[in-house]
Image (tube, rainbow, N blue to C red):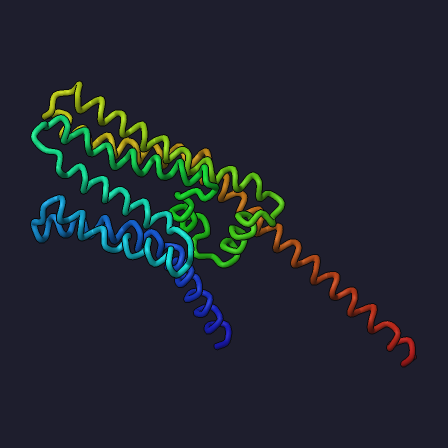
Length: 257
């Protein structure tokens, strides 16, 4: 019965950890983007109105983090900036090529925001990467924290890969923006309408592939190595404790003899 209870408890803790790690993505990214398409599709709102209403959550999150936590919530602030840019550009109309080109402004805003976050020493894409590397495992999450805090042996290597991950995504989104703008003014409008969506899919796929090999996979290996190192350290400590206990018992045995 105890074993079953412990297993169930570990399972619940892992699920809670996964939800905790995914919460920033859900609240700061999924909710605003999902609400935008929901307002525009289900309620038939204009682009301006949908962007305005979908900006409520990131706006509240940004203000709350500044007032309550005295820091800026990077993801929430970035989504808010993207929505504001979209609101400003929604006034642009008439020229179909300009309407196609303005969609690239969103990618460029996100890309620049990501690169700025790296320059400030707080890579923005880390929040999206962490859940997939720690996998809700307490030992892996603890290893991540040690590596990210600089207290682990290979922290420098880990932090470098963390920055590389965000830099790649920032550059990919900027390149996608440039491709959209160039295509909007050089390719027939009818072709660019469907090609713009394809460019976004290609950019995301390229980002995942490049980031996987250059940063995500090496970071996963570093986390695994750190878990093993910590387990080995724990075993050594247990051995030392047993030796100390045995030494403490030897005099008593001699007196008894």
